[in-house]
Image 1: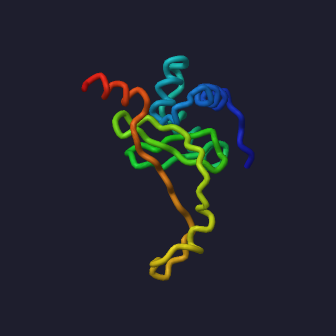
Image 2: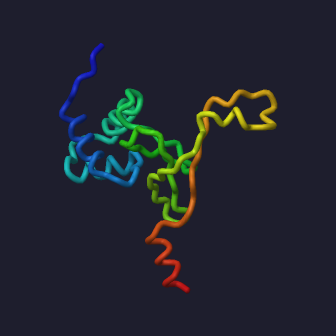
Image 3: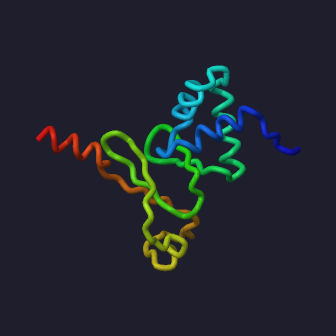
Length: 133
C-alpha cells in the first residue's frame, strides 16, 4: 500500500526540518502545536515514527529517557550535554565497521552494531558554570 503525502505530514516535516537541536517527538509536537493547534500529539508522533521506519529521518536512542530525531542520515556521532541535555552532531573518523577485527575478549560474540555517544558541556552551560565560579 502506497504511503500518502498528507497536509499534516508536510507541516510536521517543515517544522521538523527547521529544528537543528535533534528534537524529541514532544519538542516537535510543541513546535507544530504552536503554529497548528489542530494537529494532535498522536499524529505528530505517528508521522515521526513512520518517517524513521522509512529511513527519511533517524531515530536516536541516546542515554536519556526520550528518543531524539535527526535529519542527518550519514555516518556521524552525537555529543550530549551532561548539564542541559542538548544534542549536537560530532564528525570524527572512527572505524566502527571493522571493530570486531581488532576486539579481544568478545567471549565468542560477533559484533554487529556499535553505538558511540560523547558527553560533555555545551558552550552555554560552560559559560554558565564559569559565571558561577
